Image 1 (tube, helix red, strand yellow):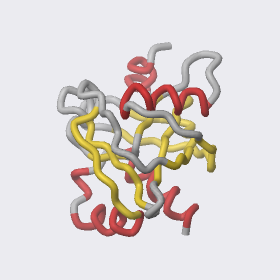
Image 2 (cartoon, helix red, strand yellow):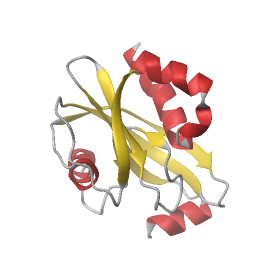
Image 3 (tube, helix red, strand yellow):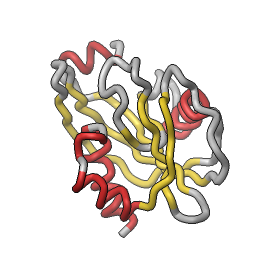
Length: 153
């Protein structure tokens, strides 16, 4: 089914989340484009989306990195887990999320239809900032980042 139907019905489905880090061990965050149908303008991990039929997690992550951030890098799957994140607009993310990591040091070539801006932050700075201003981050990123932070700590 289409992802919108899965989100409307809160059905469990596959997804992936990519964290790109640089040589300073900073994570590239993206600010979602203001025209997105949910969570516009909020900060989140480097990219995330849904696998297409027959597509591996790594292939999907590389595809979406290019579509959103304008670059590709090698990815490695770190872990996967299931989470549920309801939104105010009636949609719900209920996902088996495959979390991947990649290395990159240059500026992205962001797609303005998908991404408003980007920035690099250390994991600790993200953790501290989420405590100070949680409303500027996507609901799923708050959940995924907690798992990611536990994994790297």
